[in-house]
Every structure is written in structure tokens, then in C-alpha cells.
Length: 388
Image (cartoon, rainbow, N blue to C red):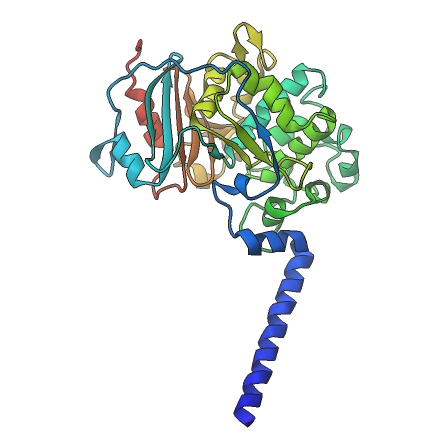
């Protein structure tokens, strides 16, 4: 009898602790965010099917990619030369597209993946957002990258952002309070799950790290997203993406951009879903300096500025000293002198080798336990110069 009562008291005590923890968690990131985490779990490349969002459509006149079949590329991993398709199949890839001189020269899809089905690009979305900011500058909706953020988000004037410019946000150089980690009580998790993203963004503060050492912060991109949201209204960010990029680029498939709630704000740093073939069109746009069929989609010089290193050596983290990623620009990673990379969680990559006129896209359900930047660079070098 006493043993049963003791077990009952222990169970009640445990339950009280769990409830208290859930209460503290809900206070930290919001009850809606906690509910979504408990319902859906951690983020995956299929999250766009689980959350609110806006759908993009194939272009009114889709552009089929010309195809020029070539030899299957090979890569070297752990001292062994392997056919790239075998490597992809063994390391959680969904798709690979290799484009050279405007033609698809190699393509692979997992047997379980329809190449016409979009998947989440995670932080590759940041580089697309950068192009949208460029388009907004061209359209006169954003006056200049030298404008203070507070011109568009005056609520941040009292939160240390008065000296922060749009260009600072593009370069992840705001020094904001955003911490990029998986702390369940932290701001990064809150941003990924909240249904009130605008309030979360306006609660950020900027501090002493403004123009300090490079620190990766998705929150800086979220600031850009809120600026776009306001200057575009009533047009949504997704509608602007469709009109300014997907339609002129000739997108061949539908896509989706997740929002914080129905009719809400796009999670611009993480949550655009496209097919690998349609993502490759953005790489081709980079190679063409932002011009499609004679029409300029971003200001002249925008891509040159985007790919200029924002951080001198003394501000570049020592933790990245041995990385193939050698710098950061306007929401794009730099990989040496001639290559730029958009990359996202779980192995989403848009690799553009500007000297060889090659675009390589890899999407997947995980990183697959290997580093892809060097491998994608190797794939790019297997395309013979002057081919097809």
C-alpha cells in the first residue's frame, strides 16, 4: 500500500516537472512553436508539405533544358575514384543536375524521387532572397543597400539597429542577438517554428559585434525578408519570386515557400522548395550576370557586389581556415576566386563555377556523412572546357 502511494507521488512529481518544463519552453519560444515541434518533430526536406505556405507555378512558357549527354563524372573520395551516381545513391542524395554552357550534361535522381517533385532547399533560400533584394533595388522599392534597416523597420531603431544597413544584413554583419544553434529554448528554434515571425524579428537587438568577426546568423536574412514583405505589399514575396524570376527563367515545375501561418510571412532564410532543375536556373542566371533574353533581372553590378568578399582575413573565423568556403558575400558563400555556393542543411547545394561556365546542383535528405563542396568542384572540372 505504501509502495503504491510512493509510486503515485513519484509519478505526480514527474508529471509536475514535465509540465513545468513545457511551460518554460512555451514561454521561451511560444506555445504555437512548441506545439509544432511536438507534432512534426525536427525539420526535414519535406516540411513544405506540413506547414502553411504559398505555392509557385511552372512558368507560363516553361523552358525545357537542352540536354547533351556526356560521360558520367567521377569523383575521388578517401583515395578511391568513384562514379558520381554510385556516390549519390550511397549518400542520401535526391538529385544531381550538371549544366554546362546552358545544357544539362549529366543528371541523376534517386529511384524513389520524382525529379519533378520539389524539396526544401533550406539555407539555399538565403541566396534566392539576396536576388530578390537586388530586384527590389532595381524596381525602386528599396532605395539602396546603404539605407539603414530602420528606414523600412522603424521598430528596430530602439534596438541597436540605427547604424545597421541593408548591406550589413546581406553580409550577415549586423551583430544581432540571433544565435544559430539547436537550443530548444533559443531564438533559432523559435524562428523556425513560430506562427508570429514578424514579432520575433522585431524583438532582435544589435550590439557590439556589429562589423566584428563573421558569425553566421539566419536572423539577418529574416530581417531582409521582413523588409521585402513590407516594401512589396500587397504582393507577397512568393508572388514576387514568381513574377521576377521563376516566370522569366522558365521554371518547369511547381514549388512552395513556407510561411509562419496562413497568409503570413515567408521564412526566407530556410524554407523555399524547388526542384533541382529549377534551382539550376538560378545558377545559370549567375553565369549570365543576371540577364535573361536581354532583360536584366537584377541591377548591373549586383552579382559582382554579391560575390565580393565581405570579410578581410582578420575578420574571417579561424574555424573556417581549412574550409573550401573562403568567404561570404551577399548571402552567398565564396569558394576560391571563381566559384560561388548556395548551401543548405542536409546537403542542399547550388555550386556555380564561373570560370568553367558550369552549374552543379545536389539535393538530398541528409549530408550523407561527407563534404560536398570539394566533390562538386571536382564534378565541375570533369566537364571539358568548350563542351558540349
